[in-house]
Length: 247
Image (cartoon, rainbow, N blue to C red; front, side, top):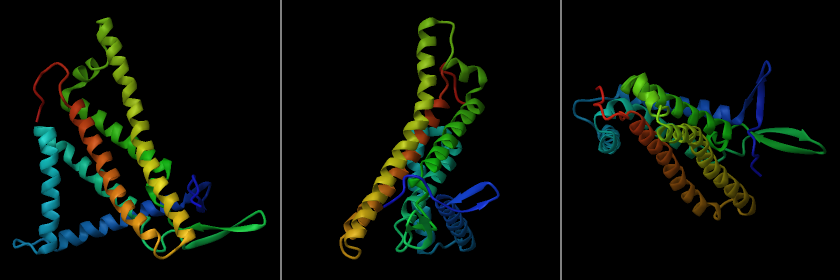
């Protein structure tokens, strides 16, 4: 059964290193390796892999540009980074043997297997951290793009009605963090639980349809998180007073 809380593998001083952290490091290594591989094989006449990467990047950039327009150059790096990191993190738990290799911990009279890796996004700490990074980056970008005065005018006003609306919007910024983190965590964790149950009943044939479903869910959830971040950034970098955005 999948634990709701990420299990510690070892500790560095008083800091416990959980299997969700080891998966995060694994995802980071994969991303760094992909970046090095792509950069090392860039050619004027692209091969199939380079064509595929360029096509994917261009497709996502065009999608971002259709929503964010002239702010795309600022927003796209965040949009694409969130998408790729979350996608690989979601799919990492589908690797064969991923959750079955680990160490045994004694719990009472029984030994319990603690896997070395656990899908990073199936840990609420990870998804909450991603949501906080998304929110902080969005507000910093907003201040840099439209200025402090226009940024504050979105939430605070001398007009009582506008002030009430602004305070509601300020509260909604905190609910966005909760929504982003729990949506991603809930879907990925539920999938991990279902796969764990099905694999325990029949480990060979039965899990295949669920694995295929989780591939789709992992893709969709990564896209939703990245898209929502992109939309929030677009909204908050739009001048509240109707002035033009600085490029």
